[in-house]
Length: 100
Image (cartoon, rainbow, N blue to C red; front, side, top):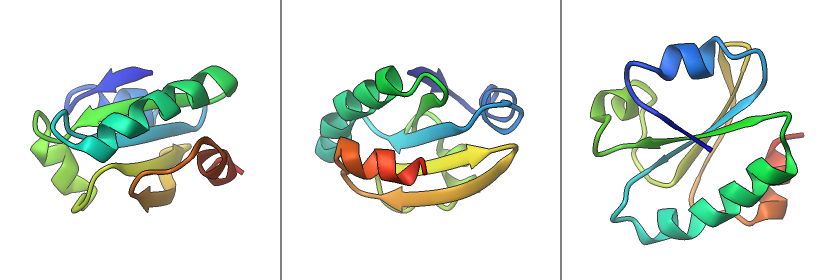
């Protein structure tokens, strides 16, 4: 998993040739803490995608840009466009289904 911020988002997510799943989260968020190891397993099981995380406290403008109102929020991007999104804690199988 990679950490994304305001400065690196466009290059590492929107300009990426592969799909990128972005986790908008915060360190104080318990569901976010529970989602993190599941995302790590997803990244390990699916090297064809990039899994990235954005700290909404450190990057409020980025969270605002994508209308993040609840966390964890997961946004799937491909070829510069957001193609799927979901909010809340998800299992590994649910996340794998999101990638299809």
